[in-house]
Image 1 (spheres, rainbow, N blue to C red):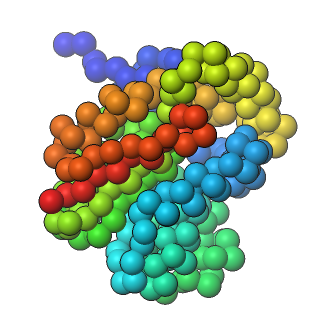
Image 2: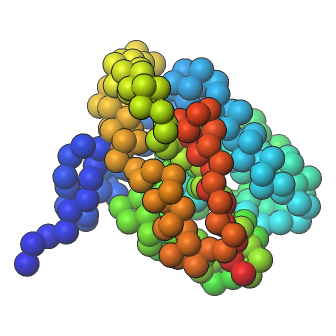
Image 3: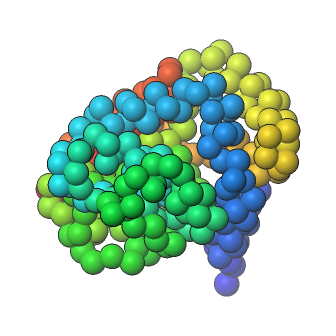
Length: 247
């Protein structure tokens, strides 16, 4: 029987290997992850995350599960917007969570935060637990995104909301060509200069190109069962927000 394979950037690897490889990437870049996000996007990732919060409109007392939550960027924003509530940051890579716990925001919000090492495809939570599920720049690194979406649906309460922020495809070919030149030529070089790790950022650039386009991913949400599923392009489609509800 042939072993199932999946993509790790532009490489084909056995499915069983991908999670370990992704863990290696993020363990390597954890301490420089936030600095690199600012450098790669010229700070625009902060505007994308604010746009996510604008659409999400957190309310007081809500419970958030932030999957692939890394250093806590989304959870901090959520709790500040909500005013009160609780956020659980789940990530496959413990060094990312360690880096998050060391941030000043984490100290100020310690009672409202949990940090959990876990897998998006097998969440260690009961059914119908959370009001909101977010995953930002993480789902393209999951071995089987459709399984992660099924798990998201399971742990959300009826009336709960999923929101995915991910790099996507620019619908204008000329702009996509220019963006590709920037991504493949500059981002790995930045990774080497800032994080001392060219290979991890080469993978991250390649993984963006392997992720489904906006309409394909929207159909994945609908197939999973999410209602009123929609998306909004950000910065011409460099990034995209997908939203869906469990009804």
